[in-house]
Length: 237
Image (tube, rainbow, N blue to C red; front, side, top):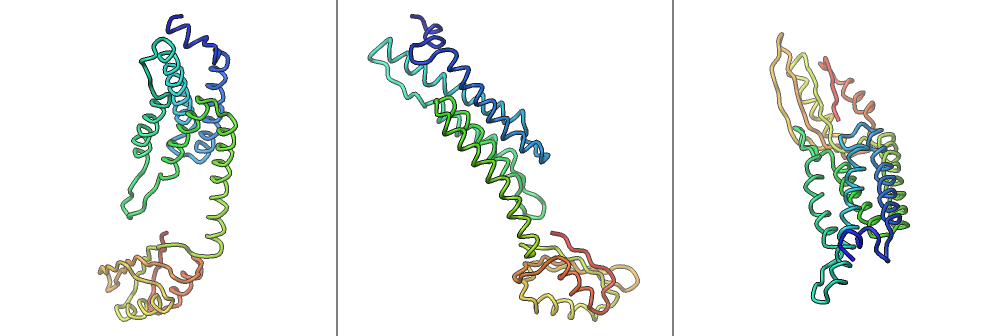
């Protein structure tokens, strides 16, 4: 039995089973990719399918080649999941490429990077023949992604989360102290503070505020708009 015939028609695994594994990896990778595609993310259907199918094929090759060389010689032993281990570490670099560090110190792309890594994991699972594990895992991935939007919706509805940039224009400098006191009275923390003169005696104040109290965006806006000498307010989250 030569190498090609063993890999294609081994007693343990027929060509049809191999193709079935690849098809399952294609479908599950596509499901994950379509969700990312619908959200306009950089990693979409094509990327997830390629990662999942390639991981599946490499896992199949790794397992079957280990079986083949073990059969032709008792002195040759190899780890059947050796390539799969390299896939996991290699895909990590690919996932790092979609993580962005924005100018406002916010990190984005972590979910997309995790999806890249997860697609490889699903492909490896299919290649190893654990179909039910792959199906359940993909279902849990989708549930977690969908639930995350629901959780964010509830947070946005009930509480103003995290940090907010506050841009306020005053027509007199005397209104500056009242502005700072208003923010501090609400148990918020001012992380950054800049003042800039603008034309006609007006000043522009830019603050980065950590919201510590339950507060919606309209509530924060209205509390600031009631202050004297406030000409314009802009809130950025």
